Image 1 (cartoon, rainbow, N blue to C red):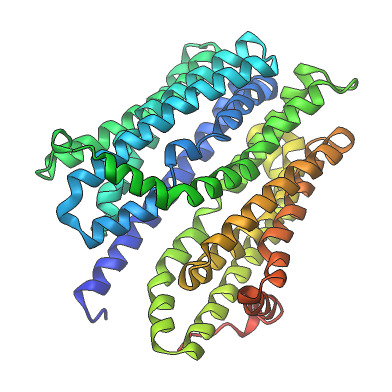
Image 2: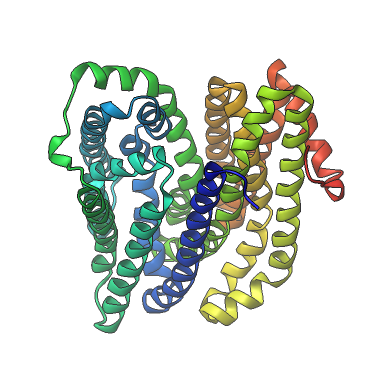
Length: 441
């Protein structure tokens, strides 16, 4: 039995997050199947290339504000209107910058007009993002129910829109507008929920001093976010760019390769919600343990790493063995190559799981500069190895580039810093003794 109202509140919060992630996973699996069948590998690859290119600049609209604003809303709820209004202004400035940069760089890269059109449409969606700051208010109040319901509605409306496009045999550009539809529903959903709670966005205030203060605090997180987005999104862009110039490929085959890669990536990303929920659920217990005793803190971190590795084994082994026949059965023979990629992608779950576990260590030790360095090193390595491997190995080379760069950024970089060497030992101990997982003290 849960002994306190606070514990019940956090359990309910986590439960809503889990329900939302599972429902979105189901929706993604269904819509991706029919969208890929409609578009085929080449058109789906072109759309994914455009989305990946815009994704490189997503840190400009996140502005590293999430943790900072949520923290300040918890500490000073009376400043809600100032914090939300100024955060929204920052996001709008970032969105304008994103639109300008993606368009300008697209022209300089010599993108064809069709791809540039897709990039422009997807970028425009970010202009609607300022109202999403309302989510910070619900995070600060530990009210995941509202956010989860908005996200579920967004997923369902997006799926309905895509099925409508499939039914009318719509052109590719209409599918790019799904990003605008999704952001419109998300922003509108938060606005409706916010107004129904008795608050109003019209009361938001913009403060130049607060804007400067938020930027001063968030700039390392902006750089960190850019590095993370680059490491996560650059593969699709580099596969398209490098293979389009390859004599054995050309533009159409390059987009087809991006399509195969993107289908596999969507499937592996859909499985990434489990370690996120586990980490968020265990974070309060680990934080409390650090205040109580070093022994209990280390024990809980070690057990979290063991649990993360055990989850990796339970997911990755069957995925590695069955990915190809499953993808061919679900998406059709055209996407059998994506099954090979998905099997290799299963290795990446190790870094997803252990990286999420490591977030608890970084947060409790306040090692944010370290995380910034590792993200930049990881992104740089990923780009360099992609240049070496993609021309000869195609999208498989890109997966190996990710594996190598994540090995360095998540594991090996710990050895170069005094404050993180102990964590490297805990991760290794967890991997080689995962069967000893027990209920932490």
